Each structure stands twice: as C-alpha cells, then as structure tokens.
Image (cartoon, rainbow, N blue to C red; front, side, top):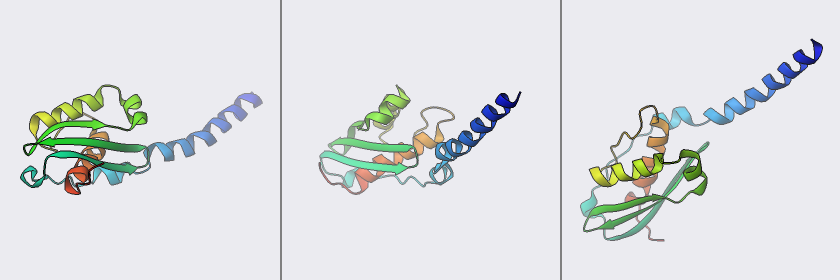
Length: 129
C-alpha cells in the first residue's frame, strides 16, 4: 500500500509540469487575430514564415504565382510527424479557398490558428529563402 501511494505521488508530481508544458501558450493562440493578406500585393515567389508558441511550432513555405497561392508546405518535420495528414488538409484548404480563413478539423482551433499565423507571416513580410 505504501509503494502504491509513493508511485501515485511521483506520477502526480510529474503530471503537473507535463500539463503546464502541454497547455503553455494555448490561450494566447486561441486569441490570435489572423489577418487576410491582399494577394494582389504579393509578387510571384516562394516565401517563408513561422509561428512558435509553446509546443505549436510551424515553419511554412508558401509559393505564389499570378497573385494566387499555389502551394503551402509545413517544413517543420516535428509538426509533420505529430499531426499526420492534418497539415495536408490545412494546406489544401488554404490553396482551395485562396484564403487564410479555414477550419480544417473541428476541435483543432489552436493548430489551425498557429498554422494560419505562420502563413500570414510568410505572405505579410515576404522574404524569399
């Protein structure tokens, strides 16, 4: 019985910092304002942008041709592994809508907003890689 209490105590002590790490930045990301980018002002090219807060780390590459988003790619390998096909759905939605105003997966608001912010940064501050 004493060993069980010790194990439970240790697990509880480990759970607290893990919870803090898991949720750090979540409320800030939920409140992010995603601004639409006027694609008529974006020249042809490939642009990079990123957004990092807590465990949400997105680095994107956005290709623009004829003032249209041709492709969006998350270049952060860690986030690609963690989210599987979610990134592909987000990328396809942005290209299809030609807009950052997407809702890819219900319940994935934090991932969507962090991803959208990285794309907004790429298109708002165009610096070619």
